[in-house]
Image 1 (tube, helix red, strand yellow):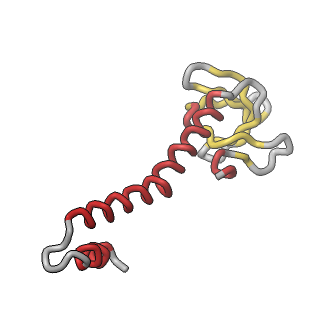
Image 2 (cartoon, rainbow, N blue to C red; image 1 turned 90 degrees about the vertical axis):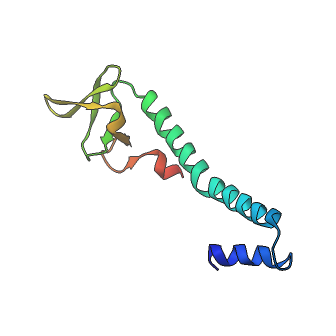
Length: 115
């Protein structure tokens, strides 16, 4: 059932003109469902990502959004120094860190895994 059909269905109950209250109630229900299933989960995911990035410390194994695996060797405000091989260090933005990797160098665990 499409959105216009639902509006017509809401208007059909009141006779020829239809009730504006029915339309507003239907629109409010759609907004509530949209908030519950789209907006709120995305806000929670962003909060988990922010908390993960704020809790980074030296020695953590991480994975960047570009796919680089490495160990954190330095932290500045928004810049993280990551050692990706012996004596090979790169600087990345804190926002580019997708998740933390387990000690075996395998799969990364990020906030998306918990959702």
